[in-house]
Length: 226
Image (cartoon, rainbow, N blue to C red):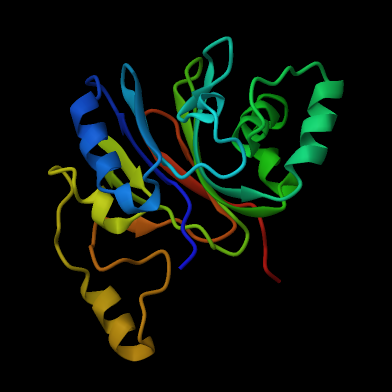
């Protein structure tokens, strides 16, 4: 199985996020990236990343990664095949890069294009971008759902990660089984997105993104397979 990096995060509605919790969720993704691990916490939002170095193996490629003005932060898992072309376009728009990573290209593209960035990407990805100015967190998943992304919306928080087992590391996430998901598994031999075995945890659909505005999560289809 081709795995590359792992992402995680928690966004609280009111209280500050627990950095130790982000660390525990991120460490649950160890098998996805044994080269490096880091956590960034800004008030109510915390992001984590397990790194398997591929494109830029230097420390400049560490994630979570932020822009120089500290406004945008990204945690990203994937591979963007056309990142060199996108980088060239962004350099013409005045962006100056500090690494050779596709993650930095996506981060800086988001500064210009927002959620229209995804349609410009050719590749496989699951990511989260945090805008410190607006307090919004955006999750996105590639067109065909090659890279996984799970999330749980709870009364006081949003929890997300590359793997289901990492989401439920947060003790606030209920582990009640989903009867409908079990029926789907018995019928089809697998559980299709957005269901998971847990009633309170969803898988983000392929070609979809989700916007956390600090209080609620709204999903949107940005790519139609048809």
